Image (tube, rainbow, N blue to C red; front, side):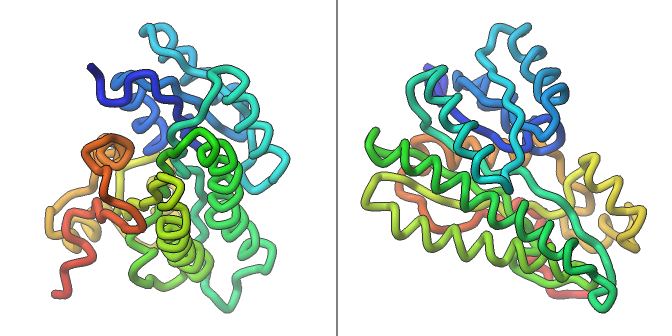
Length: 254
């Protein structure tokens, strides 16, 4: 029996990077997966590839910062498969700027997508999970939900908030058999990281030097942590975070 056999999972922002790796691994482990993107064509491409391998995948275009989009995504999922067992809040954006120059609309954009979006998705999912007897919510946060970094005021604020939200929902919804946890990845080799390097003031060598493991992480390494949190192996784990960071947060040296 596969670990997520016949489970239904929504993975937001799953047309690339970490989200795509999670969706693919969940599908391999028996889950029926919703592939989400703000652009339907991108979600469709990933869903088509999974369907070609014999997996069940449903592409849904939705902007997680819009309540109507979120509610429609959950409704379409339940209409298709009758339930919702797992939500992975992965959709997010970077925001790099000197704090004194950060435009208010950019601040709000980061908070809307990285923090309000996961709350709206969790709320809509819980309204399905509570009457069905439980579920799992996994928030993809960041090491910058635990530490600070210059020029990331909006991003750090959103991820610190997401880790706080994880603690609240994990404790509040435990009585409904809903487990809520977060993953704090460090620097993972994704298209977003490539974009960040253009404005973020760091190089590959900087990351390798600062990370005790001496390398970038890979999307599949985050996906494996998500699989653990989604499955029965973590049945007594809620309201907490798992660092997938090669030792980044633990390291206090030069």
